[in-house]
Length: 252
Length: 193
Image 1 (tube, rainbow over the protein chains, first blue to last red):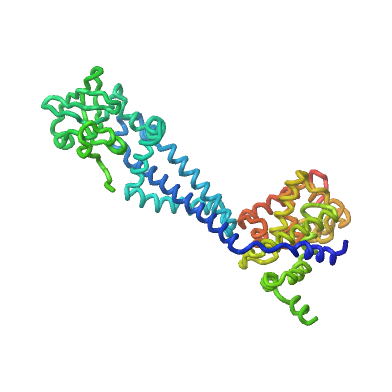
Image 2 (cartoon, rainbow over the protein chains, first blue to last red):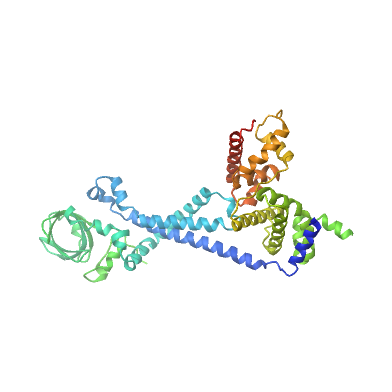
């Protein structure tokens, strides 16, 4: 078969073939860019939740919760959201790599740029309260979220270790009443009546307490602090919901 | 006649524009790239003459079908080589077979390899010619491909990056690893340098 024959054969074969229209390629490019951008936005949302869970954490009393700072970090790292963030950075990388010029950039460059965008948008979303809102929505709608993903509720249910969290349902001269996160009522004996946290205490406040369990209904309180993070706890408010304030709560 | 001469002097990009208006003008691009792409297919896929021609036809049909997707920031040759590369890989996957033994135009590759790999020029060329094809055949496809593009097709790093759709740094790494594997295979096959 001569070279001329090949040329002719090709021309013969393409006689009935039309080039694919330009809009098809443009549409494909736009879809890929859209997918990459969506993945980047979703990873930024995940970053906002990570920031929220890291910042609104019990840093002020980590030594009461864990033996060391490192242990506390490992205990409270938002593993699920970090995995979610990583997965969507990878998805964004995959789609960006498939854009027309995406192949020119190395994995490390795309990863660093994605991370920078995540930090920038994620910090903005965190400040706007989006991280808190996502944590709250997911906690309400996803079964096992509180048990497996945001496990801080578990920390503040460690009554045997002297950690008790819940809502103040009664304030008397000699004791407080507190409903914990499982709905049990505790009688709280207190001594430190001069701290601002205690003086300003109101019914409906969500609080963290460090102290000592006396028996199945009584708890001796050494320190009281407003609850941080876990804003979905507001849903669990045995008194008027308008009177269940939170520290660092962001209004929308 | 003068029209034909004029069109033969046009750039690839101008011929692409003409092809979009008139299918017949695609012939100029075919004539310009037929031999180059056929040689490239032979070099990386090691197909026989008929299979090479069949694949070449597929390549040109793909080029024509996708001509609206030609990115003018690229050289047309890089784009055409990229489509050829993809077709060879597709063909390789469909048939699920390793590329066959292939013969290289050993004189050409020899000169390039001698200068690139610091091989003594005093060595018997016939001896090296006889063995270099054998060494290239034994390389992994990804390494053989970059060596073919760099030393036989004499493409620049940027062109190789555009053809293989890999970052320039990755191309440099692949070439470096390919050279290492090439030298290692030469040692294994007891070919004296």
